Length: 530
Image (cartoon, rainbow, N blue to C red; front, side, top):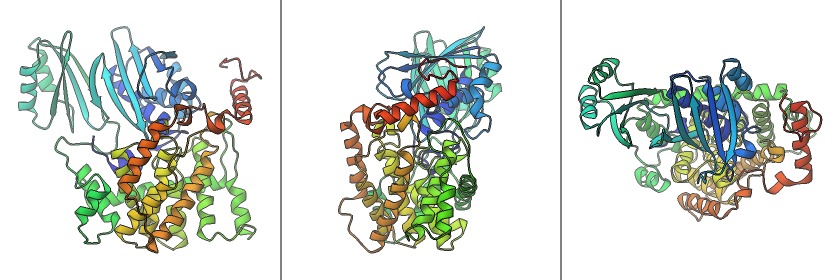
């Protein structure tokens, strides 16, 4: 799938502590619900013992997201917090098991769903930033990312005749054939499901034994003939050919090609996201409450000290710290945030952009242009690598956010394309090797501090680039280096809560304390659920 700024980079709009866990699990759950036609009574979720999910699926929102998706809800639905209870109250039982599956990806979901009349299985992975990919349905290997209307048709024989009929009757669909022991699965994907009249006609021949319709779960749809002007920073610079087009304009052109949108639609989508973020910032400063968290309300006192002149003179950086902290506190209270590029790193980029723009007296459209610039840097990272800490450590989350924010801040200052990519390169260079080690298995400590660090890094690198500092190493090479470093990291340092600060005595004691508070049993170690 070709990366989209609104699918993969700036989004989803969501609730929950982790986009890799909560938002991705929700999208997987929604596709699994469609596979069962919305009717099921039992769900078995299996997680590989060597992956990250056995130790994080409850505390980082996988359970909440998966159950919400199975209910058919959206990632920002206010009912999401109670989704496990809602699923049970709807007569659907879900259980979780740890197995030795040998899954190569650390965030692999193995789901088996059943009802009185049918049983189906689905294997999917979370690929970072709320994105996911279905790898297998009922033992049939495929690749489904939630960016199409998918019609799955099981037929006897090799499926050639049936697929040809579908293609002739509905030329807008891309047809894929998947061989199965009992016949063939035809996968028809497009901007709509295969027409009911066509399906009825095919069923009348007696060759069709099953039809499933899985709807899209991403905001920007794909098209079989989609082509984008560039996918790497080097290609962007060649495409610009010295014309000096601002990076945000290149971002608009990219997303227009990717999503079939107009320039006005692209900018309007980002302005809507800016407004969501500004509401969340205000909510965080006003104060948030949530029991299952390590940190309380801190940004309100920061604002008081800032207004009273008791802080060191950080200029715009103090407002940035306030906004970054605010967004992180909203995330930790299960409020609405935007994964930009992830939930764990949701605050550095928008906090820096919105605070700096306000300091400069700029409007929401200027903020949107800056966010679009950051989105294009994110496209290069997501295309070549990942935003998932389980795969790349916090360099993939906080490092990416800093790199993206640096380009955004250069854009606010009307810097050049060259300066924007220089700032991005320098910001990511200084965060290569950053590990992921959430204290008490919650995405708060040291995540809040790392978001502040990423934003501060972005400000410094933006000013350095605006002064024509030399990044030396091109951005594409820096991304490739971070990717290589990730493969050299032990899995304990890649978001499994088995290394770094996450295994300090204080962290382990906090985890036990929070477990006791949640279960109400007073010990925190019994594993009961009340």
